[in-house]
Amino acid sequence: MKIRHFLILISVIIFFSLIQSLNISFFGVKPNFVLAVFAAALFFIQEIWESVFLLSVASLFLKFSPHPDKDILLFFGIGVLTIIIARYLPWQPLINCLVLIFVYTFIFYLLLFPYTIISRVFIQEVLYNSFVGSAVFFFLSRLNWGEKKFGKIN
Image (cartoon, rainbow, N blue to C red; front, side):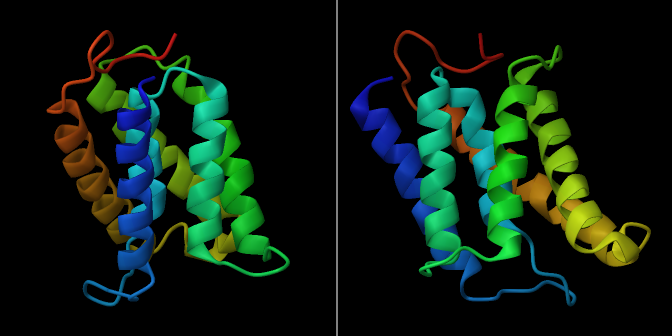
């Protein structure tokens, strides 16, 4: 990947990390902007090490502390899992992105807040994350990516 494109992805992750730190909520639910943006960005990255580095940047900017909290470790661990899953999803890139956002959010909630899986909060967050992820996906797909625009990661 060209360094310019990688810097764009890092900038987008940092931007949404800062937005997430503002604790913006819609109808009492805070979307996980970084989760959605990371899932969308995976479809524009060819190398696994680039994906892991981007995930590390996202985790670092979500909560900077000398020792990572349980939620950041889960965010990172589930992120590694989604990097692997993204490589094998068979559908169109946007559908794959939405599936990844759902899986990422579902596993995150299942491990951190299992009692809220069947709540309105979970459904709203999945919808918000899907909207944000789709918007970022469309934004990134409009950039000139050169040799590989977007699609299934191989």
